Image (cartoon, rainbow, N blue to C red; front, side, top):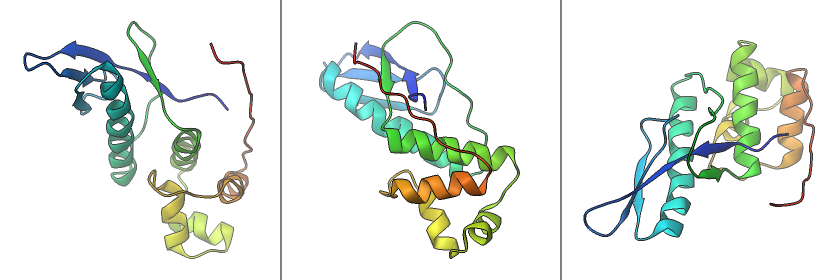
Length: 142
């Protein structure tokens, strides 16, 4: 599994705050009192943008390369986004995934809810139901 990282632009604002935008997700705009807070808020704003795209059943493109600082989303968020992309690619709706998993629809809704703490076993089962598996790789931090 690769990390899900997005490039952000940090721009000093005229009121002493730092404005955050994300070139890959034009709807992302947030701020922080300093660069560290701006980066933390960027993660939340990016997750909100991705959640909105999932709710509208819109495609989520892979982040592009480029210049600027990166923010890396939590591993669970990355897994849920990849699960959503796999279901969308295979044209498997939530009701069909629920049937394949033998669970109720609200349980599948939680698998795509970026704010819900789904268990890894549930995510793995959903990937298996889509004919996929999770491959992990651990690297030394830079």
